[in-house]
Amino acid sequence: MKNQRVLISGAGIAGPTLAYWLLRRGFAPTLVERAQSFRTGGYMIDFWGLGYEVAERMGLRPSLDRLGYHIRELEVVDAKGRRITGLDFSRFESATHGRLVSLQRGDLAKEIYRLVAPDVETIFGDRVVAVSQKSNSALAVFKHAPARRFDLVVAADGLHSPLRALVSGEREVGVVDLGCYTAAFTSDTYPHRDEDVYVSYTAPGRQIARYTLRGGRTAFFFAYTGDGLVPLTHAEPAQRTALHKAFGGLGWECDEILAKLDRAKDFYFDVVAQVRLRSWSKGRIALLGDAAYCPSLLSGQGSAFAMIGAYLLAYELARADGDYTMAYAAYERQFKPFIEAKQRTAAGYRRWFAPRTARGVWLRNRAIQALSLPGLGSFLMGRSLGDRLVLPD
Image (cartoon, rainbow, N blue to C red):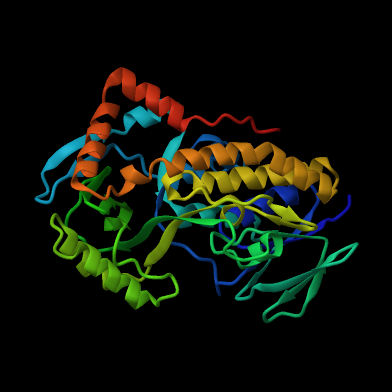
């Protein structure tokens, strides 16, 4: 087999998934991760569809059952905490034939990495700063470690991928800002708990939600648009201050939640954006996951798409016996139309995610009510949750 030595930048979800499947087909992957150790945390994700199927093929079904949550209900409340509307999550379970689970993104990533950790070299606390492509290899230059030669390089280093420039020319080329920021954290001491219920409050341009976790913990999620957005280059204290300005005095439990924010150690903050590129590869370098095709959290399937893409890329490399020119082209030809359709759908959800006006909030709430109608709700959920793609064996 040709081109067996594969450097994978990023040890989140896409990178270790790719490493898992490459190992099974005789490749020798190496992971490099800029964090000093494996990172956990992040926001809660709903996990279903083909991503769930990939996880099952990796033997992760017991982990999903152990770590996941089966949310019983979405409850929408007003500024005084009174219920406005809601949605029975059993409808989602039915539409996915019971193959749906909610879990923290970091928990999923940790379980995937656990599968490959004993067999894959992982370089923590370092990153690739340059790649020089030759006719028979790629020389990867690291910030700290000595330069090394690999046959292939895969950038699976997220929405803000520094390696994207090696394919697209500039780091932020193709990054489409959807005009919304999001944040998340957890607390061990929050007093209000509604077991297995996702409780959400929305004001114009603002959404805040909470959901209970095991061990007495509570997870919180923020989304906001409009004035007061802070650049991601600002330090974490400025990001927390921006959330205080956006949600302070807004009603419901906002002030109580913000008080817990100040002591959170697992704070997450990012822009809601998509990545849309003409090509996902250049020479021996390929892009994967959010680095290539971030659908944004509006899709609800970013982690699933990362795993599907990793599975398909590994499949094509194995099928082509390491011929990357054939494999990269086939990977993109098969997966790119699917992703582009999902991105268009996700972008259409922007006005429902954090509506900018009171009328928009009202309309969004009425849409949630409509999903509760037996016939219409089942039809719409079936369409939105379906994946029109067949995984190769």
